[in-house]
Length: 182
Image 1: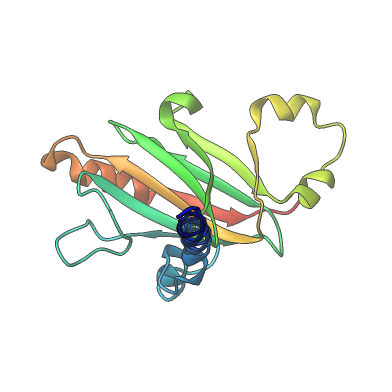
Image 2: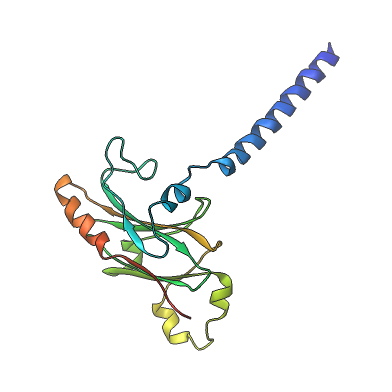
């Protein structure tokens, strides 16, 4: 009897390990993740306004119809990026993703505390190249370090009422994502 219990326990343990490993590995095999979907339509290092989500018309999965969205597909091999986003009347957020869709940084208009969200996106190597006398500018400058050379920046503006969607879309129209020399 104990021999059968050992076999059952071993089988359950092995099944649990295989299940856990599969769950961790499966997202890496996805071919239609957000970066791959947007590679066909979004130019590199510039902002593209996404269409307002409607049934059957989603550029990205799980888009909220109360938000207007824009994306910047970035590549930091040449130079760091300067992101400038005007704040919408209700709420604005900026989220940074690697090219494997892993979120690594987010900021919203309330955290920025200004009418415009401005920041510099660069790799750790590019940040190390900054001059040491950046003390004065460092207080006014928000620098985000990207763990990868390529990725996505998703900018969202809330339209709390359907009639405010045009204001949210207009706010995103002023967003800029441009390379900037060190």
